[in-house]
Image 1 (tube, rainbow, N blue to C red):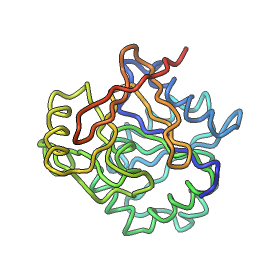
Image 2: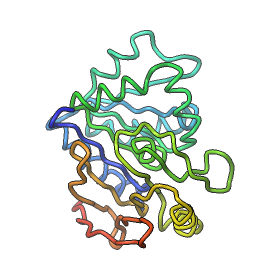
Image 3: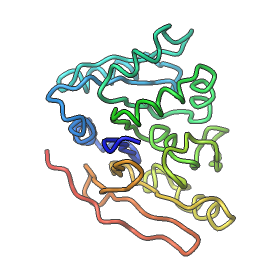
Image 4: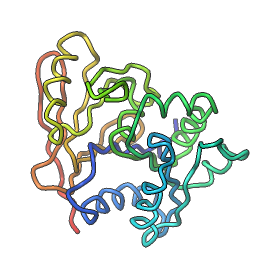
Length: 229
C-alpha cells in the first residue's frame, strides 16, 4: 500500500449544501491539487439523474468533475477512466446492490488499485460503509441489518447517520453485543480520515457532530475538529 493512500468516510451530509461542501473540500485537499479531478460514482442510487446533477452543481466550482455510470453498462475503459482521477466520490444509497454491481464488473479491484495508488476515496453512508469489512445498512429493507461483505480496505465495521436516524444507535449496539464486528459510528456531518489504514483525525462541518468507537465494552466519543467555512 502506498504511503499516500487516503479514505474519508462521512456519516452523512451536513445541514446545508455549504456545510456538506466543507467536507468535500477537506477530502479534495488531500489530493494536493488546486483543482483536482473528481469522479462521482452513483451506483448505489442506480445512477439517478438528480444525484448526478447535484454533484456537478456542488463540485464544478472547485474541481474538474465527471461521473461513472454502470447502467446500462460501465464504459469499456473502466479501469483507465477511474484511475485517471485524483479523487473518487461514492454516493449514498443501497450498499449491497452497489457492491454486487461493482464486483460483477471488477470495479472492486479497480478501487483497491486506486486506493493503493493514492487516489482519494470518500463518500457518505454507502460511501462510508463500503470501505470497511462490515457495516450496518438498510440495503435489505427499512429494517437495519449487519452486512459483512464490504471491500475490506479498513478493518471492522462502520455505521453512518448515527445521530440522524433514530434506530441507528440502538441497532448498532444490538448487533455488536451479538457478535458483530465493532467499529466506528459517524454522526451526520462528521468525517473520519484514514491515511492508509490508520485513522488520523475526525472532522465535522456541524457543531456537536462527531464519531464514536463502538465495541463490546461500550462506546467512546472521539474529538472532532470543526471545519471552518
